[in-house]
Image 1: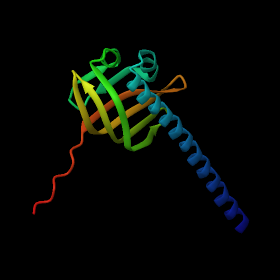
Image 2 (image 1 turned 90 degrees about the vertical axis):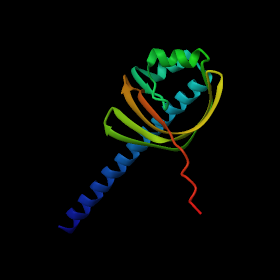
Image 3 (image 1 turned 180 degrees about the vertical axis):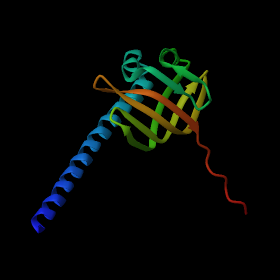
Image 4 (image 1 turned 60 degrees about the horizontal axis):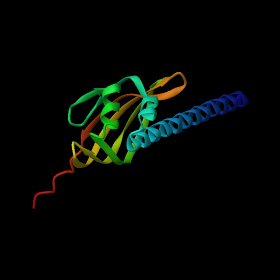
Length: 153
């Protein structure tokens, strides 16, 4: 009986280690996909943006505007909005289902829009979907994060 209990514990441990390794591989693949998205933003590369965005993309800007795939790619490649850098201070992934990943985080962005420089900190929620073996951005919602008010003296 003691051997059977030990065997069950070892099997459970092996299964959980395999699940952790699988999650680590998924997170690595998603980080790579998101890093490619960031590089495509900065390069304003239409082909790369087209490849990383789902055809069903809904992109919610922190300003409240919402774009579909074609509209957002046109915005980025027209020069109307130009990103110079996107730096994550936090980026986490969870998996509510096998082909869906949620990315939450905080990103510091430097850009120019309509000729005006923008430097902001955004809280973000992104939905990634695996489509034909490739992770593609399905939805994005950003919101401006303001620093907390200084304590009253």
